[in-house]
Structure formats: C-alpha cells, structure tokens
Image (tube, rainbow, N blue to C red; front, top):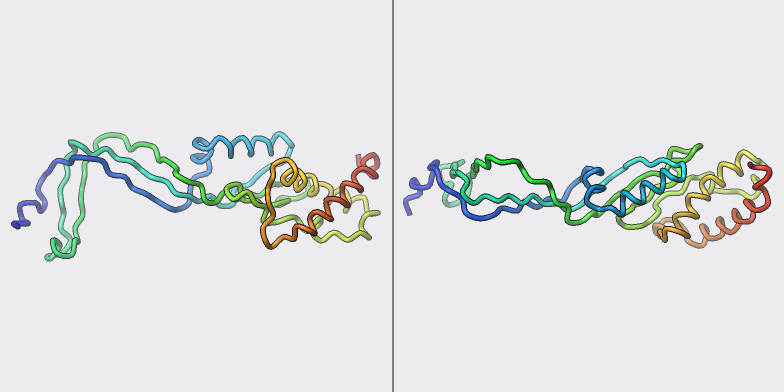
Length: 199
C-alpha cells in the first residue's frame, strides 16, 4: 500500500464518532439530566439546611456526527503506518454537542445545619450515609441535662432520621446500624420530653 497517498492529504469523513469518558462530572450538568438529584437537593433547602458538593463522578459521552467533514491523517513517526502512531485532524465546523451522562457512579455531598458545616455526608448515587456528626454519633447519656449539647445533637438527629425513615438511605458499612437505631430511639424520647424547653 502506498501510505503516502493518505499521509497529510485531505479526505472526507463518513460516519459518527462516540467518545466515552469515566471521570469527574460538573454537578450542574448532572442536575440538568437527572431530575431526582435536583429534587432531593431542593428538599434539603426547603428544610432550612444547606449542602456542599464533595465529589461527583460518572460515565459520560460525546457523540460527533462527522459525515462530510474534512479530515487528514498526520503521521507522528516514520513507521506510523506499522505502529499506528498518527493523529487524525477533523474540521468539525459546527458547535460541539452537549455531553450525555450515561451513569452517575458517585455524588457525595455534605448536609450542613445551623451548628455544623458537616452534619452528615452521603452519596446520592449509592444512597448511603457515610458520616454522622460526632455530637450524635458519640452521644453520652450523661449529656442529656446539658441543653446546648442536647439541642445540637437533636439537630443532627433530625437529618439522620429524615434520611433513614423518609428517604430510605442506608448506612455505610463503617457505621453500625444497631448503634444508629439505638440513638434514634433515645432521641425520639428526648425530643418528646424536652421539646418545650428546647424551643
């Protein structure tokens, strides 16, 4: 084959090129294409809490329609035709289409409340809680007469209870389910007994 006939010479493309990626994502792009995440974050704001993006990753693609576009093969080494060391230059001459997200593998956020910038950490994609603020997680029953400590722990309790009972989140394997259930039971009682004094 006379490779000089295709080296650095103009040609015309025919077909479609799909580029696939597995990397970090822009949260806003995910929210535009996956309404369930936006609805969840909106609920957080409606409750008077805040959220902070930690990490968003997934699989996404770019689909390029190349038919009829000018292109050329640009060799990178003398033996390019043997080892495949060449570049392809394509003049698209039209706007690059929007990325399509195929799958969200990780969507980690912190939920912040009045007293804590990191009340809980959760992964929306995996639907798991990975961290619970220490004032609840390391609760000591001797603190229950301290109104400030009790109030701050109740703040965390409200978030955890909402995530587990209403949103059906699971706990990460590093968090004991038995311990969390016991804490929620205690704080159900504390809340009913002390609501008037705390308010």
